[in-house]
Image (cartoon, rainbow, N blue to C red; front, side, top):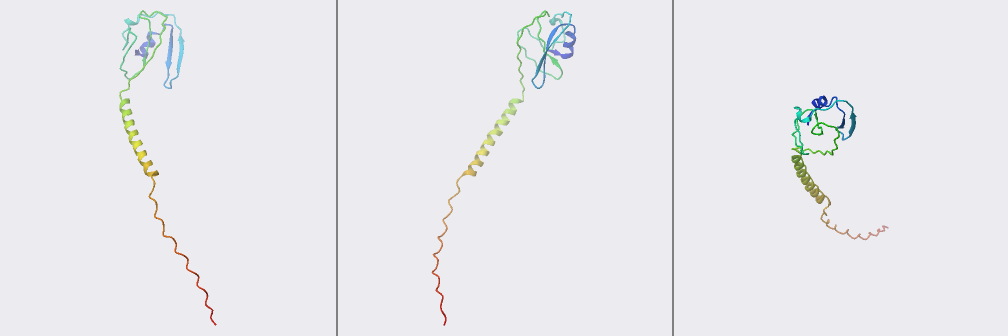
Length: 142
């Protein structure tokens, strides 16, 4: 791993394949042609992290960085499968907060649901209406 500008200078005259990975997850592969021969990578002083064991850990810092996969002697013909991972320290804290909020939200929702669907007490039956009184007969006046 090295600053992108230093890698561009180092590879300026060589033939190499370049993989660009974009923020949206897309990637492009391009062959850069050149006629120069690379100096041994181990003789270069611009690398900020390197390994020959196949596993590398690096604490990222601000800037534009390039990951370069080379043979130890700089010769062509590299066949490699690369995977990467990142540890983001604040993700655990965010996850914990979201879980706690989710539990409170679930409890609040259950409480509101309980009170919203519980049966209300049966209303008292109203008193039966009074029997209609017999209609008074009209009185005849003479």
